[in-house]
Amino acid sequence: MNIDILLGLQWGDEGKGKIVDVLTPDYDIVARFQGGPNAGHTIEFHGEKHVLHLIPSGIFHGDKINVIGNGLVVDPVVFRNEVESLGIGTATVRKRLLLSLKAHLIMPTHKLLDAAHEASLGDARIGSTLRGIGPAYTDKASRNGIRIGDLFRKDFRDFYHSRVSEHMRLLQGYGYSGEMKDLEDEWFEAVEYMKQFTTVNADYYIETALRNGRRVLAEGAQGTMLDIDFGTYPFVTSSSTVAAGACTGLGVAPGRTGEVFGIFKAYCTRVGSGPFPTELEDANGQMMRDRGNEYGATTGRPRRCGWLDLPALKYAIMINGVTRLFMMKADVLSGFSEIKICKSYTTGGREQTELPYCLYEIEGLNYVTFKGWHSDITGCRSWDELPPELKDYIAYIERETGIPITIVSVGPDRSATINR
Ligand code: GDP
Ligand code: IMO
Ligand code: MG
Image 1 (cartoon, rainbow, N blue to C red):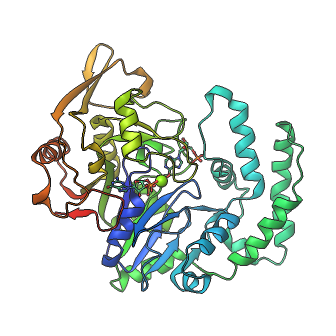
Image 2 (cartoon, rainbow, N blue to C red):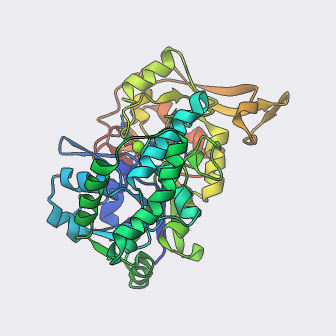
Image 3 (tube, protein in one colour):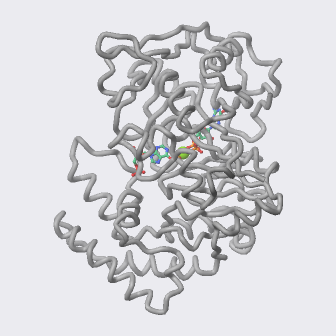
């Protein structure tokens, strides 16, 4: 078997959590491959809403295994709170969840460094989620990190302090003089809690599973435009959010990958700073925010909203090798008299369909306008029930991208999903 990959094509929050939960019955294993508690993946069913930050979105299905891959950075405190708030009991989660020994840990000082660094940037700040993501990946790259496998070292406390001493020097440089004791006590307690969970060589585990014909779905976090290499650098996250990241984040060979499911909203959103060409700072943008409840699942910040950006979407499809598209939140566009798609940019006085090196170089946006629809589509459960205007909108995107849109999502609930 090959591993299928599901990832976001925009600036995150496309609805990855919802769709992973919907697809989980077709798989045996769901494996997160990057990111950390900066992610907020929302799942709704039976009138209840759950937001996952670290735990893969297949966790609510009884007979499935969920894997936290080596590509993640894990905060033990967030992990503990999340497990305890799932409502299915720690013992149940322990049966369904495996942790890669090679995943890195977020330390209390990583969060302090994230905050200090953001504050030092002033108006140029990234708008980080302040979860310690950047500093934890920095330590991974500079070989100063701690991995889950290190928790079992006899000298773990000394090892921890040897890592933290460098952080303290940096924090002093930022003028930080706060107390560490309470933060560290809480962290070490959470570490002990995390050690009750099963740790594995996730690379071997997944390879063996695939060889035995088990179906594996890789779950991405963030989105392609937030990728460390291909996103709107420096306004990005610190990991590889793209399909190649599933290989490095799980230890899966490139030849082992199967379908790549690319998820996008019927419009665009972004939370945090950085360029966003189609952003609407008008009544239309506000209407998207209100109807789509566009407030961050992790930080509660209002999300910036705008029309669909086709050059950016095509770029993401190219980078990821997307084989199927899933369009989310189509219901949010109900009630707009006109709906627009940006089909190209103007840069250097010329029309361009490629993304420029820096999105701030874009001088103008060229839009195609579609007729809106007014019916509420949240109750639609089949393709035939959808309004013709929405079908035209979808057909245009399929024609332009050359990729079929095989799922249309019309509401946050599991059931509000149209499978074509
Ligand atoms: P993720 O980070 O990609 O998993 O997405 P988030 O959970 O951060 O944000 C997506 C938000 O949209 C969540 O509040 C979902 O419950 C909600 N959502 C997902 N699909 C739909 C949809 O088709 N329609 C509407 N109205 N909301 C949706
Ligand atoms: P999910 O998985 C949307 C954004 C932050 C900030 C930038 C860097 O729910 O789609 P970081 O904390 O990673 O250093 O922040 O990336 N960001 C997200 N935006 N959805 C996410 O995750 C995000 N994770 C990080 O807002 O602009
Ligand atoms: Mg999210």
